[in-house]
Image (cartoon, one colour):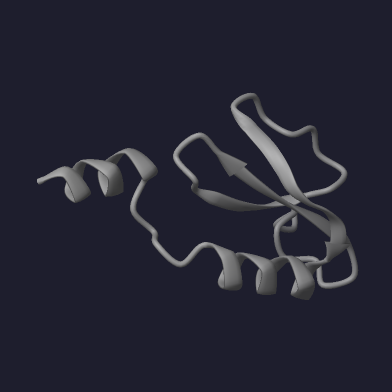
Length: 70
């Protein structure tokens, strides 16, 4: 069985959850509850580039907010 996250010839979505965590997601698999699409089906390289450009703080949003108030 091959890993569905490693097909360079397929399209992927970029998902984000309420904690602003990003995920590369195969476009042919149902989006899980709690995540929403921020980049529609795109080539894998484009989806990874989107994540690199937009997910610059790996901390969950709640942790980042708590650290700002300290």
